[in-house]
Image (cartoon, rainbow, N blue to C red; front, side, top):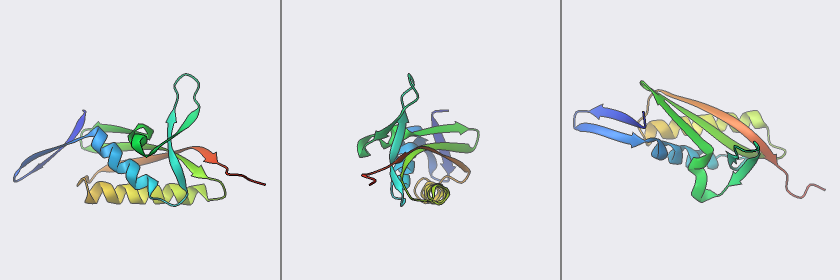
Length: 121
C-alpha cells in the first residue's frame, strides 16, 4: 500500500508514505542528541548524513492492513546516552503521528547508524 487511508463521516483522507516520512523526520530532528538523519548507500553500507531538505530519505514507511511501521535511521552526537535519544525519538514521532496525521496504530523502529564526534581533544 502506498498510502494510509483514514475514513471519517466527511469522507476519506489519503496520507502518502512521503508525508508520513516527512512528519516523522521533522519530529525526530527536534529530539536532543540527534545530529541528523542517515541515508545508507546501498553499494557499501556507509551511513551518510542528510540535510534538512532530505529528511524523508532517512525514513522508511511500510503500511500493512491498519499498521503503519516507521523505520528511522539517525546519527547521534557523541557523549549522549543512545537509549534515551532513541526513546525520545519514539515518543515524539508517536505523538506527531497521532496529533498531526491521526494515526492510531504505529510501530516505530529507531536505527542508530552512527555517532558524530566534533573536535574531540
